Image (cartoon, rainbow, N blue to C red):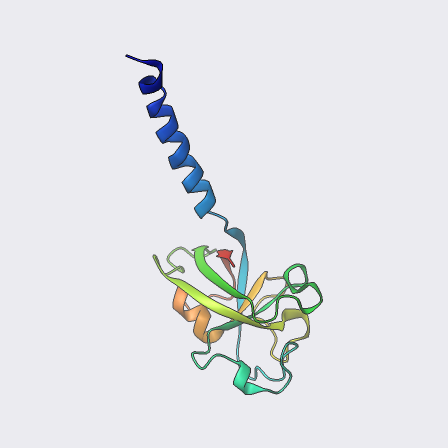
Length: 140
């Protein structure tokens, strides 16, 4: 066997591992939910046309907010666990638009100190709505 053919399996393994790590840039955090009224928002004030008609939006904590830089960002969010087993909806992911800063939102979140605070519609797509707090995986 030549040396080039013996390195083929290690090259294939390297490519597979590299692809896996490139595709998994998600962060882990927590999510709560909040209900209407959603206006005014820190990003758009009273401009309701900036809220997605699907009601799939969120507010963010101070780490992500970063002086308003998070406004209009899109995140994919998936529930990974919760205190109550069976809370997460397996295989469900929701895409949300950032429209507010959690610290100053008009409607208070179901739990303080969450990474993302999802609209009720977005939260219900990935978790049982009776939960106030879930663990999530999210990526921009």
